[in-house]
Image 1: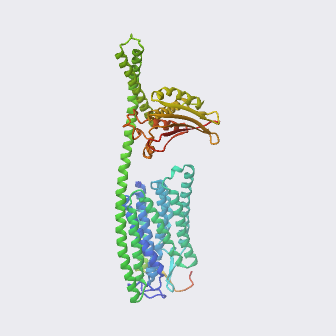
Image 2: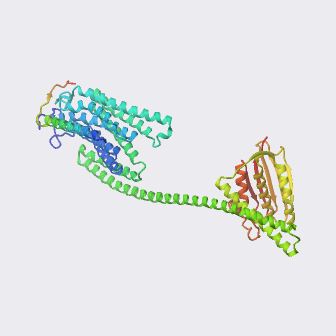
Length: 42
Length: 556
C-alpha cells in the first residue's frame, strides 16, 4: 500500500473511531436520543 | 446507563439482557458462525504470511463477527441506550462487510490493492455513513414499546452503497469470465467459480437483509450470516488450497468446534434439569468423539504427507533415470557412428585379401581373412542394430514413404536369405494368398529391414524343418499380413510376453548358442508402428515353433 493510501486509511479510521465513541457516549452516557413510545412508528 | 428499558421485556441475564424473546436460531447460527469465521481466518492469516488477501479476509471476519455480536445485543438487550448504540453501529459493520468483500475480491483477481483514486472515491462514498453515524439521520429514536430503532434517511444511502458493492462484484465476475472465454489459461485456479459463488452469496445476504428490513420480519436477517460463513469458508479454502493438507485438519477441527458450540448454545434457552442433563451428556460425548476424530485425521494427514514425500522422491528419481537413458542413447549413437567407418575398412580389406587383390594367399591365411570378414560383418550388423535403436528412441529415425508392392519385396528378401537357411538345412518357402495387388504406402528400406529381421530371426531359432513366409490380405479392413511360420524352438508364454522388449531374447537362446543382440524384434515392432502397422508373435509353446506376423495398412 502506498504512503498516500496509508494516510487516507489512517484519517478514515480516526474519524470512524471518533464517530463510534460519540455514538456510545450519546447512547449510554448522555442518553441524548429520542425515545418513542408509540407502537406504530415504522 | 439509561434506566429507560424496553417495556416488552424483562432483563433475566446479567441485568441487561433477556434470553427469552430471542429466537433459538440466533444462538444456533450467530455464535458458531462468529467463532468459526474468526478461527478460520486467523489460521489463514498465519498460513498465508499476512498477505494482502489474508489480512482483508481477517478484517471481513472481524466485521462479520462484530456485526453478529451486535445483532445478538439488539435481539437480547433491554436498556434503550444499549439498543440505540447497537442499532446505530450496525450500519457501520454492515457497510464494512460489503466494502471489505469487494476489496477482497479485487485483491484476489488483480493480486494487488486498488489504486489510490479508487480508495479515495470509496472513502468519499463512505464518509456520510461515518460522519452521520451519531446523528438522527442514522437512528431517529428508539421505540421502547417493542425495542426497535427507527431508521433515518441514512439507511437508504446504506442500501444504495450495498447495492453498488453487489454491482461492483458483478462487474469483476463478468470481467473475469470474459477474459476466461477469450483465453482459458487466464484462470487456472478456477477463480470464475469463486467469483460467481461470492456474487450469489453476497446477493443472498443483501436480499435477506432487505427482506427483513422491509417486511419487518427480522428472522429473515438470521439467514444472511449462513451465506457469509460459506463465503468465508470458500475464500479460506482458496487461499490455502495449494499449500498444505493441514486444511483438512483445520476443517475437521472447525466442524467439531461448530458442533460443540451448537450444542453449547442450547444452554442459553433450555429449561429443566432433565434437559440440561441430556444436553450436558451429549456435549461430553460429542467432545470425546470429536477428539478421536481429530486425532485420526491428524494421523491420516501425516501418512498422506509421507506418501506425498515418497511420490516426490520417486518422480525425481524417474526424471533422473530418463535423463540417464537419454544420455545412454546419445552415447550409443555416437559410439556406433564411430565404429561404422573402421568396420567398413576392415570388411573391405578382408574382402580384397580374400579375392586375391594383394596376390594369392596361402590356404591358412585365406581362412583367416574369411574369418575376419565374417566377424566384421557380424559386428557391423550389431552396430547397425544399436544405431537403429538409439535413433528410434531419440525420435531421429527418418521415414521416406512411397507406394510399392510388398509381395515383390518379400519375395526378394526370402530369395536373399534362402542360401543362409539352406546352409542350416532349413527349407524356406514363400506363399501368397492375396485378394488385392498387395500395394502398401510405407518406407521401402525400413520394410525390408523388418522382413529381414523377422525371417533371419526364424532362421536363427530353427534347427530343422521349414520356414514358411505367407503374404495374405483383408481388403475389407484394408490390412496386409505377412506371416513367418517356423518349426523352430518355439516360446513359452513368459517369453512371448517380453519378446518385443529391448535386449530380450528367447529363454533358450544362450544355451542354444544363438548369436544376437535382442534388438531385432524390438526394432521391427517400432518401425512397423511408425508406419501404421504392428508385429505380433505367437507360439504354442517351447519346441512347437513360432509365428511372427507383420501387419501393415493396405492401399486400395
